[in-house]
Image (cartoon, rainbow, N blue to C red; front, side):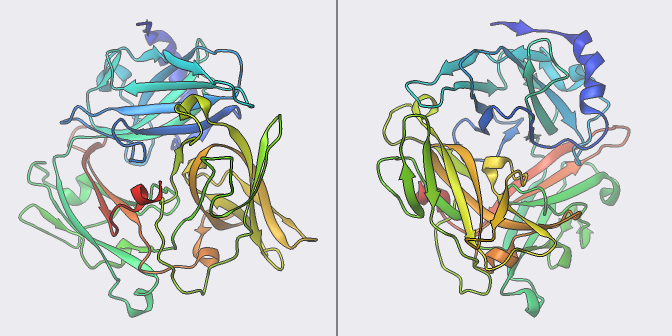
Length: 424
């Protein structure tokens, strides 16, 4: 163990790094690829820990480099809206406040060389004392003010019971295109005297943050049961099944792949020309829900032997969108709209190329008006009530006299069975 305890360094640099603005998933170093954070027993699961259950999360990422770099990791507790709390690390962490990432391996016989780093936590170096929203920050040794990435995850102490369903909205105009999340929350174990002030409720769709519903208020409170049924604020645009492609093998063109160009330096893949799906009938397909899964069918160890390749995405369009940019939306870019497509007036297509590691990927096209925050997926992909989706309900409690939000309820609600497992 190469534990690292730098209390003075952390205390000095944390304010300048984190500040008091909301933190988010971000990659600062363009050589960092295939960033994943998942439960140890489910690579496609949400990054959540339970204080009453000895589960663990796994961090995995690649650095496109031939030379090893010593990296350090630490954690920052945030409130329900991802603003860093004023608690010191010793108040929410046990053990060290920082530690080295000790597990790393070099890629084997790949055209693009990389180093694969991994970390499992909590571990012998760092454990969590309280529940809440956490940021995992990774940075080079002795450079805490220069993180290479930050990643959000959750630690929950499930004091609340959540019971919910996905329903068609009561509004007839929305019943074919939207989904209503109807639920109740039992807060008997919280001893909350003023639930409307002390409890914060959020709903998230498929891991996206851009369309998350925040600050929900219960319709009624009776016998420690918060009722969130039949509310117009609980409604999401259902969207459509995520597009999908599989290049776990480079020996043949799988579904939705038009061509694979193998060469000595780097492989290039072109996807089939995609078309808009708005105003078209719903097609029942298995969905990865925007997630990705690293795998090479050629080799045994995908983490070290999977190849990187440039993947070209294309969308047919007779003319460019007015006053809006077109992006790819999916977990492979942390849902961050990092990849904008450019319009080709000659060929009448939008396109972009991205360096990706072999595996299974799902994504959608999204429009974002210039200088606006709203992300519009339905205008391109369509929206249908039947669409498979995953919703996570989170309940936060700020106890009287405290300055941080405990995560006391976490529940996933889905309207499908085995969607992800069937596709991979």
